[in-house]
Image (cartoon, rainbow over all chains, first blue to last red; front, side, top):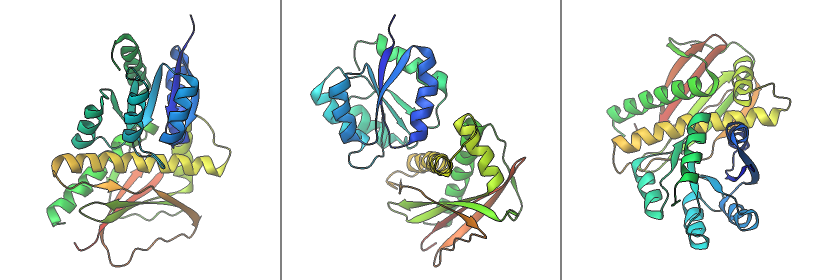
Length: 125
Length: 155
């Protein structure tokens, strides 16, 4: 069985490593890394990943703007938002855009794997 | 920011700092009375606070502790100094972000946001912020001392 493709959009190389460490032993492959939302959008169209992990605070284009643009390109895109900031207002803004999967940094590997698997099983992103 | 909010912020940073250290590095930090970081080689990370209340958080630790912390975050030895900086920046970003989240949820409308962290390292390094009132909290772990200094304008 092939692995599921994951695109990491985050300006932190540490988070890229942490996501790889969590997901790659569990049936996922990190196929790309964008350091900002603009790069993330381009990579999404090129790589067509099964899941995107998306940071909120990034240079050039932040996570919320990126998510809006992603939903316009592909309404069924599956996004996990990863952020150290997770206040109620931010989560509400993310939900209004259509993101229902939010993990606060630092995250535990099991937590990310579980959410990724649940997201793949769900019909809606 | 009135004194109560200031104290809440200090407590939130302390809680977030300990949680992040525990989750990321499995280090136990205990608050202690004033202690000097004896090592000459030090690392300082500055994170700006913007929004309704402006200020900054200054995180400082000695070279040995930073080595242990960043190796734990990296899951192994770190061979270049840039990776040390990257881990320190992310560590600071996480505990400050977690603290800002707690503050924003507790005080609606405070709209606290953080600037990207800046890291400095050097021998006999001193970072001074004039015209700011700050409180320093000291923590001790088996690998050394950490200080977290939280300052706001106009307190």
